[in-house]
Amino acid sequence: MEHAPAWLTNSLIYLGAAVFAVPLSRALGLGSIIGYLAAGIAIGPWGLALVTNAPDILHFAEFGVVLMLFLVGLELEPRRLWSLRRPIFGWGSAQVLGCAALLCVAAMLAGQTWRVSLVAALGLALSSTAIALQVMGERNLLPTSSGQSGFSILLFQDVAAIPILALLPLLGGVADNDAADANRWLEAAKIVAVIGGIVLGGRLLLRPLLRWIAKSKTPEIFTAASLLLVVAIAALMQLVGLSMALGAFLAGVLLAESEYRRELETDIEPFKGLLLGLFFIAVGMSIDFGVLMRSPGLMAAVVIGFLAIKAAVIYTLSRLMDLPMQERPVFTLLLAQGGEFAFVVFQAATGAGVIAPETSSLLIGAVAVSMLLSPVILVAVDKLLLPRWANCNVPKLAEISEQQHAPIIIAGFGRYGQIIGRLLGAQGLGATVLDHDADMIEAARSFGYKVFYGDATRLDLLRTAGAETAKILMIAVDDKEQSLAIVDLAREHFPHLELIVRAKDVTHWNELRDRGVMHVERELFESSLRSARSVLEALGYAPHEARAHAMRFRRHNLELFEQMYPHRKDRAKLIAVIKQGRAQLEEQMAQERAEREKRRIESRSRPAGWGSEDAAGGD
Image (tube, rainbow, N blue to C red; front, side, top):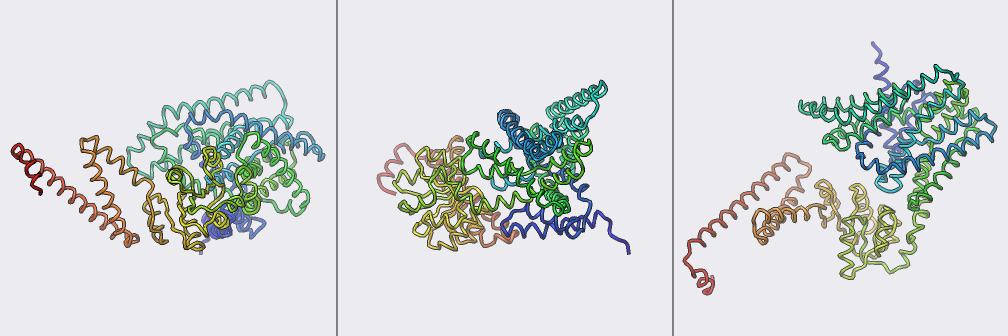
């Protein structure tokens, strides 16, 4: 009997470990990253030893970070990136240089040579782009001020990795002669040429090429072209010794205004998620527990020391950047951990003879342990410290309870919730407003709104906000999963509350109805009807006619939703109900148009004055 090939066996092991560990980790409230890292530890050389080639897997899995940076670039138009130039080079350089300087001094005080201290400091000053962006995406922090600042610093770190790697051969004692100078100038020319080629090619060639591929109307080929684009740019950057992630990010920015942006995102997203998961598994496998067991005290000192120094610098920067107090702890923790690029720096430093292999293993282990600890510390901060820190600039939970509880609680105070709050305020009706966006809270409170910081999915916050005595809970949050979580919490603990909920789409509407919520409003439905009325009026319909058509469509649509709801899980029946409803509406509208046309013809054929006599006689 033939044995299964190695790649098939390894794939089975990776996927099985991830499928088991990640859902378990999320169920325990630890997040997906901890699950991937734990899976890597379990199957790695220091666990069950099912897989031993961790370095090879790590190099392959780093492509997940490349794909992630490409997708981030697709969300940033060049004008927006230009607007971030100051925080990128200002705060980014302050973070890297500030952390590196203090770490270097600390290492020298510990007895290391200046060369080893400098390399260790530069590597440890970098942060994990993969973990930071993943966490910021999960928490919807990227649109906030701390998210933009964190992203700017991470992007600068990718840029800073280039001169750091270029510095290593010099620290290793490479001869400084004419040949070496010529080689360095040649390398610099290659770098400029590759970056220039990516910029010009992105502007002049990529769109026509993608348009030509799209005309083939072969989805799998467009997916292949998307991956080819990222792989080719990553290979070019690797060829000249630049960061693959930086090149992919640059390509994404150049395509941010392209009509194929959404298609590219859709095609690459699944690969990014899988490879990122594989990356974190590889990081877990690469932790050298041998070094940890031989020198546990030294490892603990290195990890705690560099995390503390970086946290102090980054928290100071967050204050200088005037970030909201509520966002500083998460911002600090995400940037304090070590980064995946430190692995490359330390391995290159070992190859250049700057640091010993034992020192490199210690530093790589410290970075990996910090990446493992950071999500755990983040969970602890969320549950233990953040409720205390988060409300320093806004009223604390106790202050809500000291006030007379309002009969209405509004969860979510974005554009949707603000309109509700303004209308209620105009009627003299008070409401307790909860939101977890610190920037929005600061702006809303400057206009006189009583908005309180907090996540409405927390039972203690709802209880303190007066859910036990309130009459109505208006759920106006953007996120669908968060909306459903609040509904479940309110149904279980405050069944007396009348729930009025904003629905994003039909699926959300059905899920809310499944939970017994009867007052559901689709967020774009009414505004879309108003726009439809404006279109009819622009086409020559009288305002009262346009309004009547819109209201008739509204009634029909709501009735159709009620007819669809019992068949929501039977796709064939659901489609039949929709088609039948559409046909009925079109038939009804056609009959009304015919009747209006008939009345117009009759009115034109009546003798002058006949209409007034008829009206006087009473119809």
